[in-house]
Amino acid sequence: MPIHFDLPGRIPLFPLSGAVLMPRSRLPLHIFEPRYLQLLDDTLKTDHRMIGMIQPDGDKFAAIGCAGRVIAFSETDDGRMMISLKAISRFRLIDADQGFHPYLCAQPDWSAFARDLNGPERDPGLDRDALLCLLRRFMQAHDLSSDLGSAATADDELLINSLAMMLPFSVGDKQALLESPTLADRRELLFGLIEFALRNGDNEETLQ
Image (cartoon, rainbow, N blue to C red; front, top):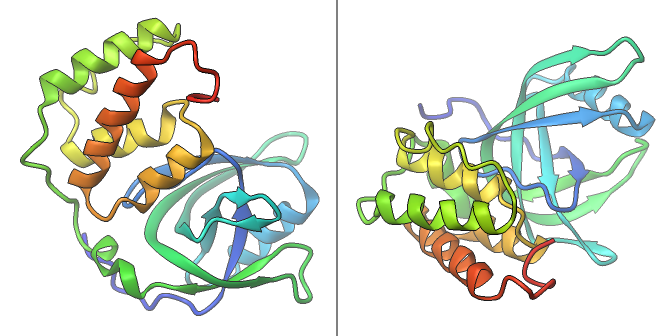
């Protein structure tokens, strides 16, 4: 479903290595640091309720992140928060500063990602059987759960984006998947990363 509200000129920033939010996907987050509890409290007071997810890159940040809208939250007995973000749009990071907050705020450039605001993408080139076969081999090789029942029937975008978010690729690989311009590009990269990991299972730099 297309987005019908204006994208904000500033958003709170949540840097988290190894965590990426793909277009139209959802990401659960466990928040416990005081500064990020404050970030959440401030975010829930806004009309857009958006948080920018981005990966650290050394002393800086990745060039591109993805903003998600808080669609659910609950508090634990010890004061921590469980939230769910629904992706709204990727953005290019123009600037980030702390200002008067205990957390960073970002100036995002949304202009290159207008497609993110529309409905799900399709991928006519997806060979689902080949992907699932490759995925089973990957799961077995890395001692991961191989229950792929839901993967067999999931929509193209949900399947590809979910795998891109959850498989244990390196930070750089996850960033490359996020930055893939189209769903077909992301699927091609995903295939390549899985095949490379299977060929180089003893290479510790391939996976985290």
